[in-house]
Length: 513
Image (cartoon, rainbow, N blue to C red; front, side, top):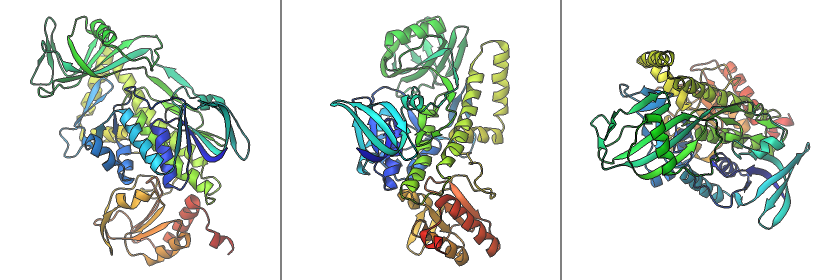
């Protein structure tokens, strides 16, 4: 059997990649070793930049219809302290509470609708590649078989077999701690206080936030008197390696709470139980020949709330580049930019999650002083906004993408007025195509862009307070080029032509000139 792209792993990164490839006209084969979709309670929500990406694809409405809209997060935990955005007119961080299993279900439906084939119970056991293709051996329910593909992407998690078979190093460390996370109904004997804390019989008051003891940390989310659902986590130093597929039990959870607090906390019926350990790792290369890595196979972060979102945006970056090569118009080094850009993005995510790890560790006076000083710094609005953008991943600007301040950043969702009526950038991005957006009726620049049509879709529109005269938008939503307002024609045309060739190749009509 032969195919264009094999995706190994049907988690969020793999399914997002499959859907994005489908939008670009490539039908991938997804191989997943598990026989059934995952039900383990792992990541619990989407947040930050991935929400914009999903909206730009028209997928956020589909997810919201099942789970409710994304909402601003006025308070966000950050390594033993809190980012408190309640004093800002607009929070820099939005999130949607949705179990990972539900995200995977919705992404799988989207990918299948767009032509992907998902085979469950099929495990890749061997891999070899040459200059032209990748050959894998697969164990399936009916025996072993081989598949040949132009490219293979390992989206098979932190213990990625693909990463090992490709010989890619995964340096880093495992933190000697275990986290147990739960959402449980507040027991009838526990009183919910006005500040969101709880009063436990025989123990006393537990405030929302982080309670540090010499045995670990008990983190309590503010409890609503109406819902009476208690969301909390224990963190203990422990060198035991747990099997993440082995579910957390109420007995294990209760024992952990007792060890950390030194007291019994009555617990009601659970709606979520999960256990996880943090690792701090990043693959040395996201690409070796025709083999790529995305998601947890490429990076593991020592904090919650970032891994699934980062992995899905890895896949959005990679998909259009693979499709461009398969369709024959990719510039020679386009696929190399995947490692350059996403390794950089992974480094930014590691930066803030490593900072969280440093802040939450240590229970001595020095550690408490560090958390206190950090909290004081966050009282300044610019610092608070900057940290919010870092956590959300909305401050990302890819390196080596151009000199204009907008290039390499994610295109804002501008309201647009066209000859056909009102629209916005998000709606234009639904098709995942390269876009040239003329905002100043620059016929000179449209003339250049038209040389790349229909590879690049051209739109002319007006917007209030335009950020540039024109924008060249990549399929992943990042800006490849922007024209400075009132920039001289010859300069702007030359820079636009260079950017078009760099990201979208030389059209056949121009090769013969």
